[in-house]
Amino acid sequence: MQWPLATTRVGSTTYQVFYKSEVNMGFNLRATPHQPGGCTTMYLEHYYSGAWHQVTSQSCVPLYSDGWYGYVRALKTFTSNDHYRIRGHYTPPAKGARTAGVWSRWTYLTVRPGSPS
Image (cartoon, rainbow, N blue to C red):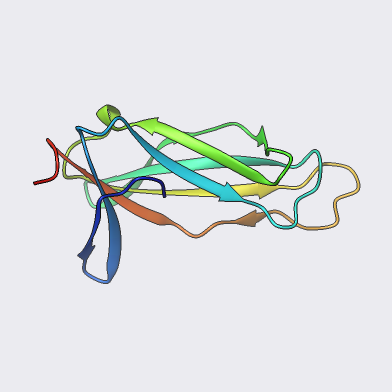
């Protein structure tokens, strides 16, 4: 995660804390090793009504030449004090793949109103 200002625990889960006064939340993903032609898909979920619901998934987009991909989302699009999680999936190229697809771990976050005190 990029730019969280704090962490908080809810049960046994640690959440990265962001504030609405910040502009964006960033999530970096690196596939190692990666192959030219591979891509990544990002998944963002929102927890409400007792379950996780997909907010968005990004189509399979190419990684940068060094294997990194940066995902940025405006914090104003998040509901204050709710819980979210994000992860990525690496898909190797369709032809000549030397590795299988792989998921990153979930990273949990919450967005608070205002700015940090």
